[in-house]
Each structure stands twice: as C-alpha cells, then as structure tokens.
Length: 46
Image (cartoon, rainbow, N blue to C red; front, top):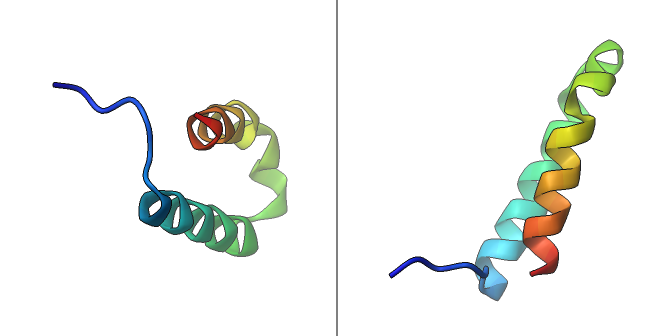
C-alpha cells in the first residue's frame, strides 16, 4: 500500500533538508532547482 501523505516528522525533516540545500547551493544554479522546489512544496502541502 502506497503512502501518499507525509507525517509531521517527515515534513519537518524535509523542510530542514530543503533549508540546508538552499543555504549551501551556489546561486548560479538556482534556475535548475525551480521545478524541483515546486514539486517538493506540493508534496509537503498534501
């Protein structure tokens, strides 16, 4: 059975990982992450 939602712990971990990636990623590559961030935001909102 597939799980199509995230529990609170998974959401917190995902948000922290996203925050860390945004802090260390080089600015010149930000255009490559746009779709990736949008997909992650959609997953978190479910």
